[in-house]
Length: 255
Image (tube, rainbow, N blue to C red; front, top):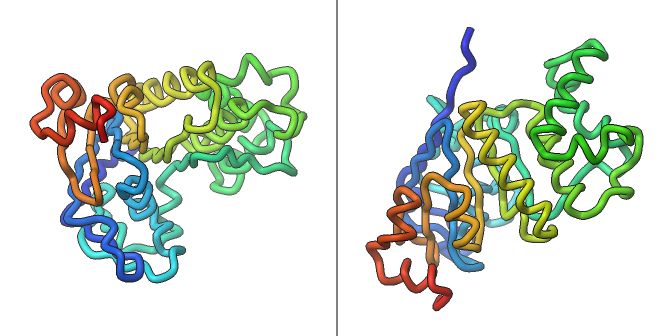
């Protein structure tokens, strides 16, 4: 049976944290096989949008959410958060490999826990596949029993990406995954993201504050400013022919 392809649709999304209205009538549609970049300045609500999609917003004290967030046929806001997160891969801004597990164990734990593989040979194949997809295999194939502290910051982030990819998620969310790593690792992570979306028909959403990164890797751009969608459309159109003056200013580094 073919794996289900999952579209992500956000409709009339409003989010409050305490008295602060963080997201205001936000909409978005991200389809399988594409990368959607959510860009905007710091404090615009980009990361909050990601937290709503994977229900991490539930952990924020005083948060209130209204609207619809659909992953396939499931309304995320009316579903069990654990079941929602099982369908989603997530990579955060700070590399977060499990420090007390080896490189191998960091990647293997997901498939083991979710019953995707039981035999050692099968797990070995998944680990190698995920590390290759994260552009890390050649650097660690002879040191799989090492621990994450022995890796550079960029390698730790690519290990975090490999751990997410090992479950072959249909939806992959990335919250500024290259903000704290070196330029070489940034290029490798970006290449991994593009390849994973295309080759696996995954729906990928990446948060970035860098217009240049959005232009490099995305098929569509959602530009958020002060919690509102200012512009949304194909990357080429948004970058080369922005409809809104605010978009033009952000792309030019003026806001």
